[in-house]
Image 1: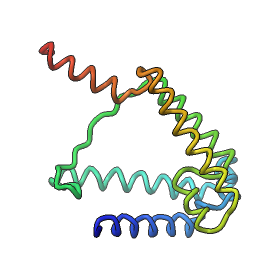
Image 2 (image 1 turned 90 degrees about the horizontal axis):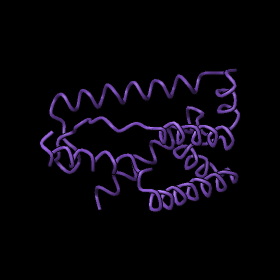
Image 3 (image 1 turned 30 degrees about the horizontal axis):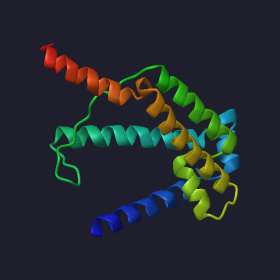
Amino acid sequence: MKRKLAYLGMGIVFGFTLSRVGASQYDLIYTMFTGEDLTLAWVIITAIVTGFIGLRVLAATGGRTFDGKPITISKKPLGWTNAAGGAVFGVGWGMAGACPGTVLAQLGEGKVLAVFTLLGILAGTFLYALLVERFPSLDLEQAHAAGATRSKREGA
């Protein structure tokens, strides 16, 4: 229960931070995508660089997860589905003015249109699950894991 409360607390702080930097403002997202105001882009770039450095330092110094497992950074498989998913994500973000993290901050601020964005996120997640079930090759992580297992069996 303590861990769940800690996660809830971190989520509240994250949502508050998103709200304070303007990541939940439709107008600021619009001006970022049109290149008129790159403030939000710099916030995102700073977060990516900070997270990258933090994870690398934790992994190098023997950091552990909440479950006590060592932190490892492994390569993820890349394919055409990454580009397709990124394109869908970007178009959706531009159209809705929200990504999965900011939509929750928008809901917390009482922005009613965020309900429709959340419904779109849920529908997209459901559609992806249906597609992967019907076309397993779309799940790159599973395909990569299967290939690694096969390689180990074959002695490669």
